[in-house]
Length: 241
Length: 147
Image 1: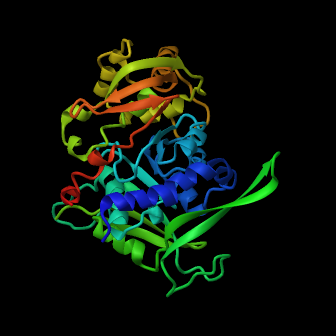
Image 2: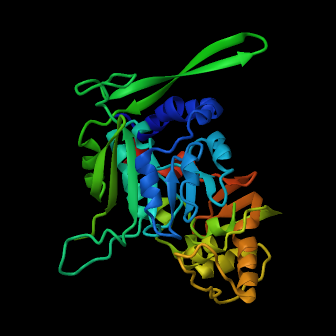
Image 3: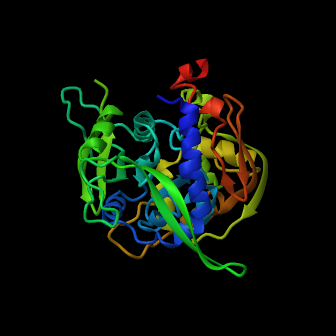
């Protein structure tokens, strides 16, 4: 297995630097909230405080005005775009080293982020880091069931391998680790209209894999499903035995 | 960077999280600016119970503000009602909280961990919590440094 530093270097070249270069164009194409994410955010109680880890242009910050969101992204260019959505906050942070106290927050969303990490270990660490900041489920001495109404919840959303009807056409059995082109059309006075292609790394999740990763990271999946080429799951922290 | 935000932040270094010295982070060389954010009393009333007032006091004092020792008491609002009737005294408290927690913006400066001393830079209002690689994964993967 490659060392941690080279995995980070790989992600720097094939994820972070790409987002920095495509930030304004990427942002202009991302404005419609996905229905599962919208439902999750609108279902939170008033005054909830939580994170949008990998917030991109911050399109989810406007969904529920009754909550406070601390949004973060690796790309400073995207953070600058997301910062306009007041009264929320946007910071530059790494999803493996989140600057928040353990057990302190009501919710976390991670939308189309974990699939950019290049090893199974790092994807597991990202999920564990999100679970760690959630308020734990209140423990019931004589019950192993989780009181999901009072526990902090995470919504994790990743790209699916099974999407044979999409433009990409991947399906079960295909390679799960792929480079996906982002084509940016540019209009410059010097060259006229031109196209530039950037490749981003993705790990495409197969059916059941997200739930397995959440379990392994110490979470308990309370709801999960498939929405338009993506797998999603809502999880709480599993109470310590 | 707002004071409200500071009350939900700590050091990104894993080893610091168990230390009470890492919360709240401390401002250094802070340049303040007053920003203009829409006043929303309901938002403040709902958020206030989630705030660690001792941490807010530490932060506010470091930035040169005077805040009450006890967390202000605010009226409960009728969730089903669309119009809020707020007493003038509460209105004054809410306006002050709005200015302190949301509109006071640290434009430039640093946030410093009281445990490890690491300084996180704030540039144009945005704090950067990316760690140099020797601090990032150390707790989880100490063996990385052996090869």
